[in-house]
Image (cartoon, rainbow, N blue to C red; front, side, top):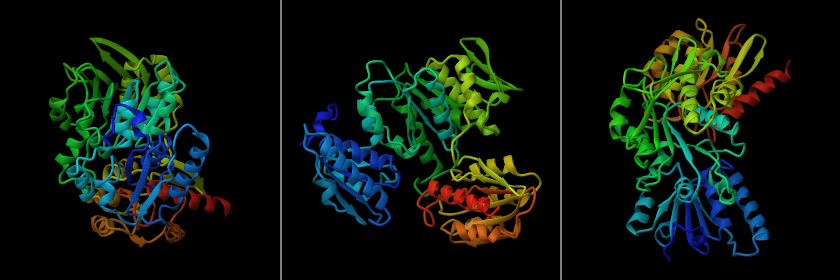
Length: 489
C-alpha cells in the first residue's frame, strides 16, 4: 500500500524499514522504531553494526514491544524483525516506507535502491515536522548548536514548562509527538538539527518558525565532497521556510553574506560579538552589554557577565538563543534569568573536578578542530594543558590545531584511530605525545606527567568511533577515570 503521510493511522500494518538503529536509548533510531511500533507498523530494523554492538538498543526495543503489546489492545502491535551486521536489498524495495537515520549517508546504495523502487524515505525529524501542530524552532551549525538548543529550551521553559528540546541532542522528537497531539494550547519545540537531519527535510516545504545557523566551519568532510557541499546542507534549515518565518545568522562570519542571499525568509536577523553594521538588526555584544536592535529600537537585555557558561563562543550562543527567545515571546527578564542559571551541557568544556591542584575537563563533544582550539584558548595558562585528543578521521586538517597544541600543551595523549597519524603529524615536535588504545591507557600514561596547576583536557577534535561507542561513551569513560582518581584520595 502507499502510505498516506498526512495520516498517522496510515502506519497501521504498513511495512517499514528502519535503517540505522544507533546506540542512544532515546536517539533517532530507537525513537523512530518505538513510534512506528506504537502505531502498528510492521518494522524491520537493519544496521551494519552487529547484534553485540547494538545489544543495549535491541534490548530497549524489545522491552518497549512487550509494553506496547500489553498497553495497546485496540490495535495490532507487531514484533520487530532485526537484520544486523548487514543490509538486505529486499528490505528497501519491498516495503511501504524507509526510515533513514542520521548516520546513514544519502548516497547509500540501499537508499538509492529504495528511491529507484519509488519507496518514500523519511526520518524521525521529517515525520515530526509533518505531524507536529505547534511552532518548531530549529538550530544548526558546526559548533554551538547543542548549547544554543538547550539554552533556548531553558528560556522557553520559563514561559512554557512543557517545552520540548530534542533532535540531534540525543532525543528523538517522536518520543514527544503523541502527547503533543493531545495538547490544546501550543507547546514550543526546539530541535537541534545536524546537516544529515536537515537533508531529510529537503522538499518537505514545512520549515521552522525560527531557524538559527550558529556558524559554518569545515567539518564532516568524510561525508561531504567539499566544504561547499557541507554548507549547502546547513543552508537547508532556511530552504523550507516561508517568507513570514524568521531566519537568524552569524554576522561575524563572512560566509554568511553569501548564505543569506539564498534565505527565503523576509525576516532576517543577525547576532554578533560586536555592534552590527548598518542595515542589520538583531543582537550583539558591546563591552559587557548584550544589546538587541529591532525596528530601530535599542534594548539592553543583559550583561556578558550574567552568562553563567564561560567562553567567547558561549557569548555567541547566548546572543542567538536570546534573540530567538524574544521572537518566541519570552520576556527580557526571563531571558536574563535563564542566562544566569543555565550551567551548560555535559561534555562541553565541563569542569569535572580539581584533584591535587589538577583540573579535569570533559570536552568530548569537541569533534572538530575549531572546538578543540576553543577549549585550548579557554583553559591554557602558559602551556599547562595535558591534552587527550585524536580518534576517527572526518577528513579535516589539523594544521592550525597542531600549532596551537605546540603553544598550549605540555603533553598529548592521542587516541588510536584513522585520524591519529594526521593528528601526530600536525603536532610534530610541538609537544611530546603518546598513542593509546583505551581510556585506561590514557590515564596511565599521564600519571607521572601531571603536576600542580595543570589542566587535563579531553577535547578530541575528531569523531569517537573505534575505541569508543560514541562521543558520550568517550566522555563517560573519562568521567569514570576522574572518579577513580578521586577514590584514591
